Length: 572
Image (cartoon, rainbow, N blue to C red; front, side, top):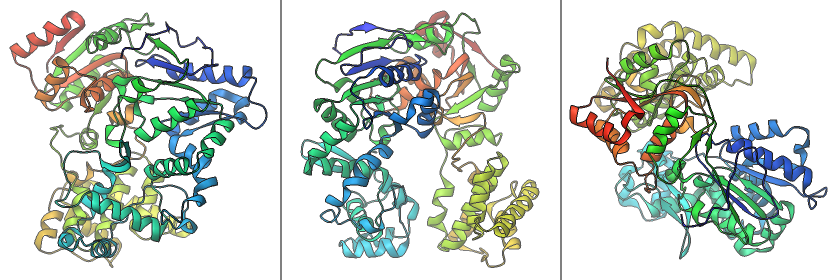
């Protein structure tokens, strides 16, 4: 980035909010602390808020929003903190969507908030294909999981030619299923179901402001100050909106770090933070690291040339340690070094994290069997029942009881709003937990037979492709469960974003990928992989361990050549 930095600041230093501000802050810099201080200063000192105007703050997650609100205290009635989708739905979609709903072919009378419901039933898909002259693709109509993924792969994006749906991955899930299908899908669910996905909120915001420019000025009038966290994860439409608001007089404050942009699959553009401009904008950088020890910061500094951080911590722990061998043994080795302190293992894939939860070695080669079961089992009711109850049981084993009861009740067609049915769901859950030792060591067919004992309406499986699917080990399906809340010490890197842990083990099951990251680090690349591993390493407070399957003598020497005495090695 060629912009001149106006100053290096510390996280406790409030800046003049009379102009737009851009703050570049690396991992552990205390950006949330700085944001909260800036918000408090605006709330207490700004002369142009009055009674009706508010300060807006955009965060990437609901948890981050709750954290900021809890720390602001009594003065938060003049503060609106939320995700971008919630902010735009409340401020633009809710009051103004009726102005364009008809021309967009949207059943506004059926609209009930924004959600991620994706319809993939055979009847819906086959009708969609027939109506839109895609009959030659009808063979895909039963591949519900891949159809769902295909819709999820597309995001609204601004281009030189306007706004359009664009694919965020480079390969098709299903041959022939792409732009035409997703565009037709959108029109059908808008018209018949009134479903507005989170990403559609951005699309309709763009359409409304383009059609009725006064909406933008009303928004700026209500929110004369807007602070945006994690700007590196903004999309093209969000970037367009924030730039428009700044040009209309809103004092925009944004904070972020390009090296921590890990959501390109959700439409994030790493270039946005560099490209944001506004009249008289001030650019600052926070080079402090409050989180990690100097040993870890020295390692992080070796991975990037655009930022050299300094740890503010005085404690001294072990150097960053490379641990060779299988993931379970590496975890035990690292745990022995950490003593009584907790050790968190971070993986890229959800399946890898689940393998470690289950005590299995991570090999990096996993297939989402749970998602694909619907493609093998034509009995939709049976398939949904198995998936829901299995998901519920695995949640129960992690003591995530609210999610467990919800999924088990859904699987057995019980309504948890009725106390007797909720009790029945809990009793069935308890029975399945007692039987876990039996069915978890067998195949999915054994689990299905246990469910049939509890509910005789479920049909058996005897032959064909569906039998082959159910004949695979139960544990292979269990490791595909995606947990909404994860209170274990084995989580994905994406779920670790924004968090810090005393001790971290980064699991890199593929040696070639690991060596490419460590030796050819490129945090500016359009793909997320190197930035993702950088984020994982920067979560560590006291100790950082990196697990690779093996290292040759030559590879070890190459690592020493780059990192020198910043790293050490441990084998088991």
